[in-house]
Length: 147
Image 1: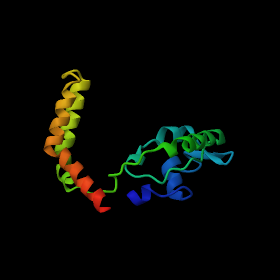
Image 2 (image 1 turned 135 degrees about the vertical axis):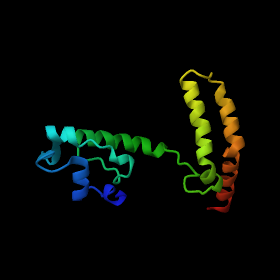
Image 3 (image 1 turned 120 degrees about the horizontal axis):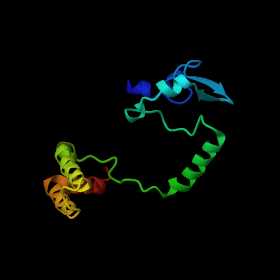
């Protein structure tokens, strides 16, 4: 299923997933798909949160594509990559549920007004104690080894 969802631009799978059935959900206008009223109503499933094709800047109006391209050219060079993204931490794998719950609960308590913002420091200390510091050490070790 994920393979089908990730079909790239230019494939019939991509066109169906993004725009629906030609003649029913979209028609072609100026070389790009234009949704019909039915297409606007029926082709709205947020499947890109499961898997998606590589991002492309089209098919859209040329002005929109040009604006997106200009933005990306300006912003992409400033992106800071996460150095731990390709690293493995056994602690992160085994304690992710517990650690995520600590942070999520604290965030919800603070945002909903049940606890003051100062409760964040306590949550972070607990996160670190229950595995966060070990995850950091795991990643530091992996980086030092060049993994």
